Length: 123
Image 1 (cartoon, rainbow, N blue to C red):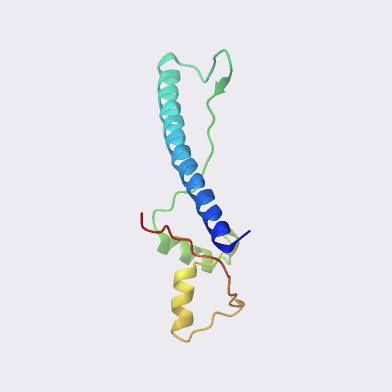
Image 2 (cartoon, one colour):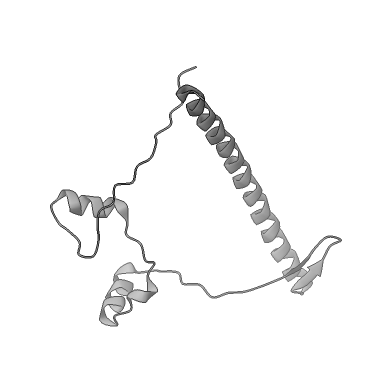
């Protein structure tokens, strides 16, 4: 296979992926709309379960954190040595800014990730 053929194959695959991602976003929006409608209807009729011919639903609840004041949260995390509450990843942008300013963050080794930038040619 020639280089240009492989580049064009990669482009076609990426475009197929983009089309499907758009379709998935639309499907997720419709699912969210159905969920809101169903929650409202279940509340109106006073039940937490219902069924159709292909599936059944049950209202579920889960407790999740919603941060209102990052300052207070970060202070509490520091005071209580509760770093375990945070996700274990570094934000690349701010880290690069520190690196560019000559500041090294202990415990981080820079890694050069190699990839390919694929751009559509003009029609």
